[in-house]
Image (cartoon, rainbow, N blue to C red):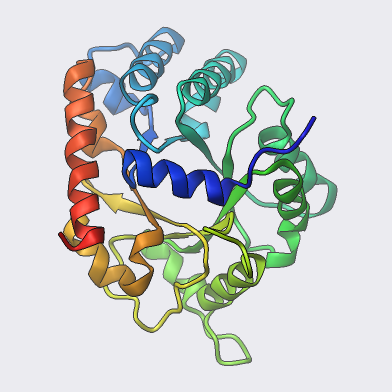
Length: 281
């Protein structure tokens, strides 16, 4: 089975054609209730199918949060498998938000679950945690290169607890977060038009001028919408790297459901605002 075109190239094209926006698929209990759905597998399936129907043929990226499916056991995972398959078939890139991180054969198994082309959960990219050491991600890095997929590594996350690890100063004087960004820049050297190894960097963190975000890879930026960041904040936060930002919005779009038209209109508004903010016009 031949590998895909590298994820970075596919992502660059999708953002240029569809707009630089990632919409989360986050079927947590409160959102199901807002949609008038039960907090069960039937509600989960209805929610996920509606989001895919509304978004997959027009947004660059869909990002299902695996935990909200896993909580329903095997039936929930089956819904996730179907959602991923249908989203990719409609043209969206799928980033699986699973934040996996482990060592050795266990990390390899996590990578195979989401990045092996014959896996039922095969996705275009996977979020991973490097906090057992960046080297622990080696099996996922290797499989991503082999399969044409990508990784988004937690680097500077928007949750307030993250700072105690990510801003900690190493013996060499660099922060842990800066070290992760440097590792990713090394992975992406020479890749055109964009590397496949990205970082998760919160859009709510304020100006990040002390960090080198120019990693020649995508920057997945949660925090747009309900968490308080706006598309207009992106140039200030990301500086010269703003063109490679993939802003993630979840509730800001999803709260407009279950009406498909309203979901599409909300996503279109965010995509237009991001495009203006990134291009400066």
